[in-house]
Length: 119
Length: 210
Image (cartoon, rainbow over all chains, first blue to last red; front, side, top):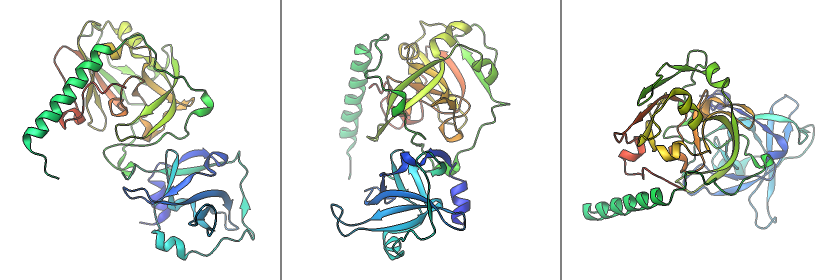
């Protein structure tokens, strides 16, 4: 099943971009391992939406930002889960550089798929 | 971890005692504190079920009917337009899950008390039982059913319920743990015979008060 098909089956719900920022991103396992923090939502030149996640590090040091497609993430109340990548796969993504990606304003509304808690 | 039958029995007895004490202490008119501003409503609400969100089967509001049975005078099935035409009440309350998480939600709907009075339900009956489109029955005590913050909810945050949140109608209570507020309600029965429920048969507390 493609990521787009899977995301569509998760009843995507409208959510304000400003309400998504600074949310914790966790691994979909019972221990809910912390992976990073949402920094920004951007629209790529091809029109696809992506979430810029500040991954890893400690107290703000040693982390790096990467662009993760919205379709690979799911919303569980306050937190966001990475549905389609393992932590190892996430770490292999290239570091995000703003380039031609356009940040969405806080009042923009995008759709996010849902999931049931993993715990 | 092995749990001997004697331990299981003791835990269930303790849970049952806890349920009984909660029922004794329950004040049918006391509103759940605190109240929250609408700005704190979590959008969208957190989804949870005993199955994955991808297995949710949306209910067609145009053909949906609420069946009524038991100790109710007027048992005509009720439709969504009928429910929407009744006086509504809104509340912003905390949803508290037995799993340990919570969120603040904003719900609008028909108070169950008003609905029962409209249909001539026996308000002295012991139990209110619910059936749902996802075959997930449950039941509550009549006192909780008549509480001012027990709604047949039709909206979340001012919008119609989304499919995974229970469209077209779900139960929403401020006085009990989240698993007692069933989504996609299709039938209500007023009865004096203990109806149990899905989780209750698995050992979860029946009263489940907060």
